[in-house]
Image (cartoon, rainbow, N blue to C red; front, top):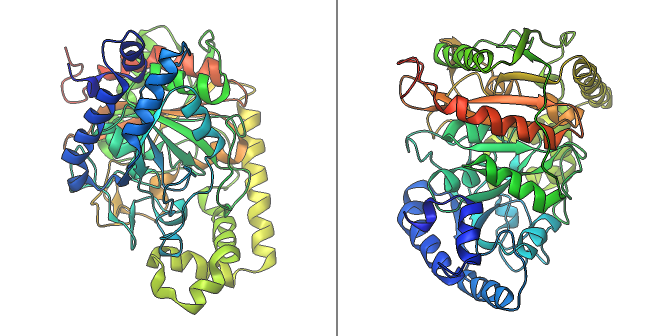
Length: 451
């Protein structure tokens, strides 16, 4: 087995046991990126100092350091600072920006022995559900390069799914590190708000909802990453009553294969002895679009002047968001703040009655890479954010949420299952996800169960 096929935990164990050197791992990761990245555009660059970082890890091991991520290549999203490397947010405005220091999360990975393979492409300012920008072009899905990996963490998930690295960091302000993992068949975890340190880094369009989020192929690597990033311990899985809802109480249509996969997942959970109750929050008419004016206004505050001076610098989709923000009234922004607060309170209250809420991660599979959003869901025309219907609620409530692979549609495109828990229950949610993930791997909606 190639070292690039190992989990991060297994790879670090091999390095610590001196069966493979950090330099050999770095060379294998660079070769894998050279082979796969030209087709996928998952990385904006491969770290020129990769081998030097590997040699530093080898020296630290020789000095007796205990490094839980010894020699593990990681990919960092293009809106998280990595000292000395160009971090652009997918924007021409930041094409020449060099990060002056590491974000604290990156520093913690390095302290644990990780090496930085490269920078994962993201949509401009991490504010779009597909990864394609004027600066870096289109990022493609490793499962089917004609499709998008989603966004905004599209490069990070594509790199992990393609085997360039076992672990990546994304950010998640509305599902950006849950929906893309669902589209490529990997795992993405949104921690409790502020559990993982955020920054130093760029200004955010909306403060207090974005998190640093680990992405991996294996649950053990999500747990390992969270032990490094936030000292999250091992815990017993969540038990009790699980609320399950195919539409999360929003009336959102699902593509038929998503519906079938979700039903198969519920059957698998019941078969494993879990208590499931059909239930969803009562949102009082509030959905993801009710809070989007916050993003539009935030983008306008940060970049409105530059957009007015030279709109050609921007992704047209981001330009439209900025223009909307410039035209918003103070009353509309205040209403969006109130909506975000109400959504948070509704979900928090719901999670006092249930241990977790379980939904599809997305109502559809990945769509064509050239498009910013799917044209239809379940055969019906849809809005530009319908694909994100089930994810922003966890951001506004600060709750942890995870997306696990959950079967594939009839075209072989991956689908995902989302599990949300109350704030602070990260360790127990991760333990539950580790228990559930093997059940979901067996799901094949066209053959009942794979052998």
